[in-house]
Length: 496
Image (tube, rainbow, N blue to C red):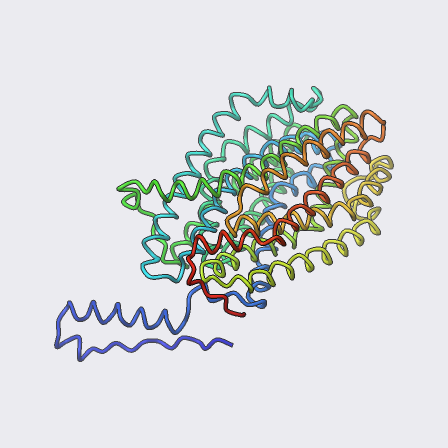
């Protein structure tokens, strides 16, 4: 166990003799000694540290998912149309979310490699300021695109004209807060880099409490039709996002030494921007490609009718909970790998990755099996439609096998990005998702008439093939050669 850091006692006598310059020097020296005793976030690389990081990340992810999905649950008393409409709107909003969170991930990766090093505060503050500017700018562009082309997006999705108005209302109201969401992701990424995942969890918890409370209040006092119910859910989402951003900003100032200043951008740090985009664009490209493929698959599902769309929405919501901890574990591992990569501890990295893979497989399989075995009860909380219950049970059975591949992909994509390989996940994702998930989904679901089950089987094949390739890529050890080139031949290969 690490010792608690004792307060440093000022040498008042010495300071009085040597004047203000000596006081300043003495404070700097004592601060350096305190950091040396206490260590930095980069020291938190043990198995226990990974677990401690993953738990608040898991809670935070659960809260983030619930901000959008709780709206669908609360809309279920108004019929299948509002749930299907919000599901289509969220599919588009998810692409924006992925792009913004990917730039946050880029800043996390870069910061974890410099935290704890000499003169780290200046470098960290520069990266942090750049991340905020990039995310806000990107969010502004996406907001403009969203408002200009939302009818075309719904047309591409084959959204039923009966629910297009509901979907548009939710999309535009929530989409108006895209800039706030971009800033939120930039700030929470910085908190994660400092291992302040409990602070991120607190911000997400606040967002959920506000979202649920405002939704319940508006639906009780105002919502009498599907239209007003959807608008109530959207307004609650907006209030929750703004409140979450405010808390994240306050926590960043209180819990870290990061200072966001425009002066960090003068002279403009082109090298930092290049590194950030070098990680962020491929990272967002990987997940964005996945989500675009899911949108195309959703357009196939929309042809099958609103009831089938509702099944897809509910099953995706429920199945996502099965590998939620895998996402948290992958994020915690990514943070730790950044520290280990910066220290050159390559053998420790390999052990961390294989252990994370094993844990992700076991937990996801257990959770998916439990959900399938209790699907009637779980789906029964959302609907009493016998068609939805029967089809949903079939989908959740396939999800047991799909979840294994998905969990491995979640982990290995984060791992490879943390280790500097941002191209392989994108290349593999683009090739496999469009060939097997999209084309295969159309062949099985529409061509052979297997419907939603056929599309889920095609997605399962896609996940397994991608997972196998990413595991083989890591096992071949190319990341070690990249690490040696990046860090030099004098790298340490210390054990944990």
